[in-house]
Amino acid sequence: MWKAVSLEDWMENRVSELSSVRPVVEEIIARVGSGGDRALLELTRRYDGVDAESILVGEEEVEAAYHAVSDKVIANLIEADARISRFHELQKPKELWLEEVEPGVVLGVRNTPLDRIGAYIPGGRAAYASTALMCTIPARVAGVRSICCCSPPPISPMTLVAMDIAGVDEVYAVGGAQAIAAMALGTESILPVQKIVGPGNIYVTMAKMLLRDRAEIDFPAGPSEIVVLADDSARPEFIAADILAQAEHDPRAASLLVTTDPGLPGQVGLHLETGIRDSERGEILEKAMENTGYLVAASMEHAVETVNRAAAEHLSLQVADPMGVLHGIRNAGAVFLGSYSAVACGDYASGTNHVLPTAGYAQVYSGLDVQHFCKRTTVQLITRDGLERMGDTIEAIAEAEGLDAHARSVRIRRQSS
Image (cartoon, rainbow, N blue to C red; front, side, top):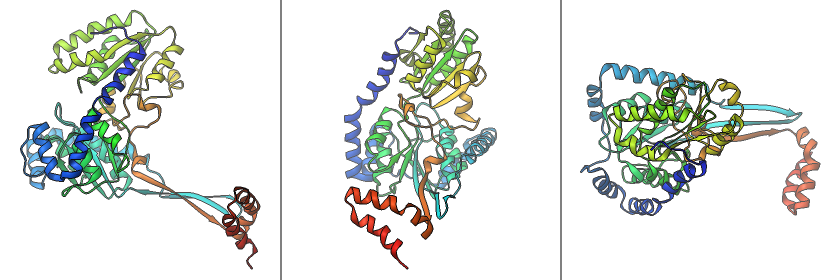
């Protein structure tokens, strides 16, 4: 399955997968919109095989989760929470900044947190406790008043513990496109949210995109992907390890090696074969290899341009001069510099966020951060002297546009005693 690919084919595969599920997702959204909680329970029974009476996760279930998770894991989740919080605190904007840009004219911005957000936490193939931390800690740091999470049942105890550590207010055992619809539209149990964040499969991603008129979203964040840019200094076993780490998330995960060393792909391929053979998730890895390949670039400049066009979720620069190459990178969700910056560090506990745009959307979107949970309101204070300085300009432009009332609203102030 390890093969040479063209960038166009590798990119097209990501887009075509997403558009193919739109009809199914539209039907699910319509069912939740008309059926509320009843529809959620029916869809949970259909897609997750869980026959539940309620979607709300109660306090007793959270308490039981703490008993089901080892003290060591709990301690490490607390440590990860601290590291992620530390990084996101650095991003926190000033509540208000003002600057006198000229005499009598003071301009600024006031930042206010959203009131209520929803986070989607994937489930099914693994326990994504780390994603619970990544989605909700920035919201907590921003000062969001109410945070709810949806995750497919049964929610793993470790994920429930992570949600509790992160300060989540409400947890609902519902997954898939129906969870996104519930948070956007509201049901009897789930109050509508202002914004929905979090990664998911292509059904979840499509639901987020279709419901943007009801709730803002972070960005399309679907199956995991990685692009590795490597030269002849790279270690093939490290490259293979990073590819497999992302590929084990989902059969639709996509990986690409871009290299200036024609001999490197063959070496990486041998390590991939060994890794797949020895993995407990070999079946998922084998399917993900269908979306995986390599491309040999004629030069480093060509390689950099190639990865910019790919606009990958994760970009690993395993080259002799990673800082030098970084200056040419324009499009990537997150960049990992050097051979020892394993992508898994960002997945768990270095502090940066692992909720990132996929499928090429890194060309226009940034990864999840504190700013996603804030609104920015411009502020201005203009004195009489300040108005006089700009009055002629405002009146002239307003009159030229034919908006006399605009001009008069300034003129009447200038003429007042």
